[in-house]
Amino acid sequence: MKNKRPSFIAVIDFGSQYTHLILRNLRELGVPAQLLAPKVNTKILNQAAGIILSGGPQSVIKNAMPFNSAVLKLPLPILGICYGLQLLANELGGQVTPGKIREYGLATLHIKKTSLLFAGIPKASQVWMSHGDSVTKLPPNFVAMGTTPALPYATVEHRTKPIYGLQFHPEVNHTTYGKNILKNFVFNICQLKPTVQKSWLTKISAQIKKQVGNKKVFLLVSGGVDSTVAFALLNKILGAPRVIGFHIDTGLMRLQESKLVNRALRQAGFKNLHIINANKIFFSKLKNITKPEVKRKIIGQTFLLVKKQAEQKLKLTTKEWLMGQGTIYPDTIESGGTKNADKIKTHHNRIGALVKMAEKGLLVEPLQELYKDEVRKLGLNLGLPKELIKTHPFPGPALGVRVLCLDNKTASRLNNKNRTITSVDYSNRILPILSVGVQGDERSYRQPLAISAPLNKIHSLHCLATKILNKHHNINRVLLAISGNNINLGASRAAYITPTRIALLRKIDNLVTQELKKSGMYYKIWQCPTVLIPFGTKHKESVVLRPFASREAMTGRAYILPIKIINKIVNKIRALNKVDYIFYDLTDKPPGTIEWE
Ligand code: XMP
Image: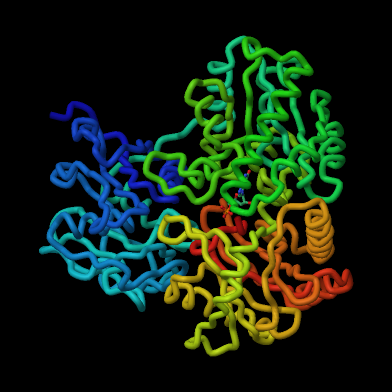
C-alpha cells in the first residue's frame, strides 16, 4: 500500500552512454529521479510515479541483462528507450531482430497517430538513433505510433495501458523535441509536479565540506575548463591555504600551454599553483606504445607517479591531504564507470588506482555529476574570466591521443588490405589506420573510409557519411580527402609518440586554432581536434581536421566550416611542407567519438 504521493521517476540503467542525460533532463525539469539497477526490488518502486527503461550496449536476444520482470507488472507508466523498448517487445510477446536495421545518428520521425506522449510535437521531427537490434514484431495490444524511413516501430504504445517505447533517444539534444517528450511523460502521463532544485554551488559546497572535513586538498590542474573550475571552487569553499594546484607539463600540451595556464591563473588571483615539468618521463614511458587504451593508462599512471614525487617534495602527507580532480560525468561513463556501461575509452582520471581511491572517499571530485556546459555556467558564476571558461575542451592525455601510432606488423597488415566500398559513388579507400568510435553504446576500433570528392560537395557528403556508416560496419568514420595526391598512393608506417611528431602536431594544431579564432569560428564550435596520422607518400604523415558541434560531448555532429576558412587552413598547413594529405572528418557521434583515440 502506498501511503505517500508518488514522488520520483525510477530510471532503470541498462548501461547506455546516455542514461545520465535522462537524469539530467529530469533534473532540469525539476523532477526527482533515481537511478536503479535492472534487478531492482519492486518495493523500492513503491513511491515511484513512473519508470524509464534506459538504453544499453547489450542485445535483449543475445546477451540480455538480468532484469526483474516483475517491474513490468507494476501499475505504473513505463517509457522504454532503445534497449528499453526492445526489452518491452521481447518480454511482452513481440520480436526483436539483430542487426537488420542499424542506425547511428540523425533520422526523421513521422508521427502517425497523436498521443499523450507526443502532445504538442510536430508530425515530422529530427531524432537521434544509436541501435544495432530493432523491434520487428509488436507485442499483443501494442500499436506503432511513429516511423522513420528505416524503421516501422520508431515509437510504439500500448492500446490501454500507459506503456510507451521509443527506439530513438529523447534524452540527447539532437532529438529536437526530446525534452518535450520527457516532459509529456513525467507531467502528463506520470502526473508529477515540478519542484525547485538547489543550485549546484550550494549542493557541491555542502558535499565538499562534508568529505574534506578539516583536511586539505591538492588538485591536478591542466588549465582546461574542468580542472580550473574545480580549483576555483575548492579555493572558494576551503580557502587558499587549504588548497594546492599542480600543473604537470607532460610534453604533450599545446603550444606554450603551460606558460599560458600559469599566467592566466595568476592573473585570476590564484597564487597556490605549482608548475611541474615532466616531459622526459612521459616520453620515455610512452616509447613504442601504439594502442590507444594502453597509451591512456600509461599517461594516467605517469600523472600519478609525477604527482607522488611532487607530494614527497612538498611533504604533503595523506593524513593531511586528499587528492582532488576535475572529473566530470562523461569521463566516468565513457570509461565504463557506471555499472552496466561499456568502456569506450579510459579517461586518464579514471584509471584503476584512482577509481579505488574514489571508492575509499580519498578523491575529491566536486564536478563528477556535471556536464561541461554546466561546469562552464558554474565557472562564470564563480567569476572566472570568460577566456578560461570558453576555451575548447582538451583531453587529459592531451596530444598523446591525437597522434596515431602503429607498430610494423599492424601497419603492413592494414596496408595489404587496401579495400574500397564499391557501392559508394565516389572514389574511396578504407585507410590503413585505426581509430576509436562508439556504436550502439559499444566501443569500436576500426578503419576509416576516405572519400575523394570536390570540397564543395562537403555538405552532401556529411549526410552521405551517416548512411554509409549505418550500412558498413567494418568502418567507423568517413573522411573527405581535401588535400594531397590520389589517396591510393599513400601507405601507413610504423610510428610512435616522439617529441618530433608531437612538435609537428603542436604546430599544426596551433595554426588551426589561430585560424579559427581569427575567423570568429572558434567560439561557434565545441572543439576542433587536429589529428596526426602516420600515413602518406613522401613525409608519411597526414592530418585530420575534426571540427565538431555538441552541447555536452555525449553526442554531436561534425561541423562543416565555411569553405573559405577550410581553404585558408589547408594552405597554412601545406605551407609547412611536412604532411602529405589533409582529411576532414565527417563523422557524427555516434558512430565516431570526438577524439580519435
Ligand atoms: P570523445 O572522444 O569520447 O570525447 O567523444 C568526449 C569529450 O571528452 C574529451 N576527452 C577527454 N577529456 N580526459 C578528459 O579530460 C580524457 O581522457 C578525455 N578523452 C576525451 C574530448 O576532448 C571531448 O570533449
